[in-house]
Length: 345
Ligand code: NAD
Ligand code: ZN
Ligand code: ZN
Image (cartoon, rainbow, N blue to C red; front, side):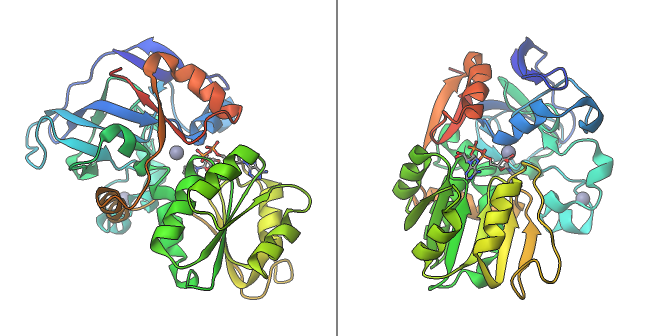
């Protein structure tokens, strides 16, 4: 089968021929319906040799949904043809966080040798994908697996970040989302659907701001030198929670400037920026947190929201042959919502 694989450091992923895997005991082979193109894959393609955490080659694509094709010995909870979403952060399955479904925070993450399918071992940008255990699958029921694929990362990551900040997101509170791309658009929607907060979106791209409005943002602000003042004007003060979906020096500095006392600045974007943390550098009582992906129960909640038609699942689909070009477009900011690769097309 064809697969989009990382084969060299600091190099775009390439389409190459690989073998269809055979599921061993406890494993599940999926026929991929859709695999979302995440900006994190661009970070992987940019990482230099010394810093790249895993051996190559492997197939990318960590935002996956499909149909069960074959199950290994002992698997009884899913059967051929079932539409399922893949929970992406694969932990050891045995430690305390893993037992709570918080595999994104597995105690043994460093020892496993990969973070999940598409992140160190073969992922979903191929016709088939091997999932090591049925525990990592969430049934999709009546949802279209192509449009649902982004729920597993572009949806789950902001959902987890929002849920972890829920105590602050009361009616009357203001949430700011910096970066209204794949994750940011879902963040805006999820804030509107699950909290009472007013939502302000910030982006450097006017088109993304227009899209942000269509997803329910109460106000939008262009990311430039005057952004902090503009956010404060729109918010009628400062923000209770800032979700930084970029994570660059400039966006983190903006986040710190617009945060109110006891506010929470959540770093989701992986641009690798930093901000100074000291007693005097931040508003009194402020929190700064990183937030990584999400938990299995949260993914089930998100699927439930989507099944009840509470979410707009907007994707642009492309055949596998066009995957390299899709990543080039993502880098140039030319993907409107989330791009989903559909290998069967
Ligand atoms: P994307 O390319 O779809 O969206 C990024 C958006 O940020 C774009 O709309 C772009 O215009 C905007 N942007 C860029 N620079 C900006 C600036 N200075 N100010 C305001 N907006 C700016 O990317 P995505 O797939 O949504 O991913 C966003 C980030 O989140 C990436 O860094 C990705 O690696 C990271 N990520 C993190 C996790 C996690 O678990 N923490 C999970 C998935 C993705
Ligand atoms: Zn991702
Ligand atoms: Zn674990």
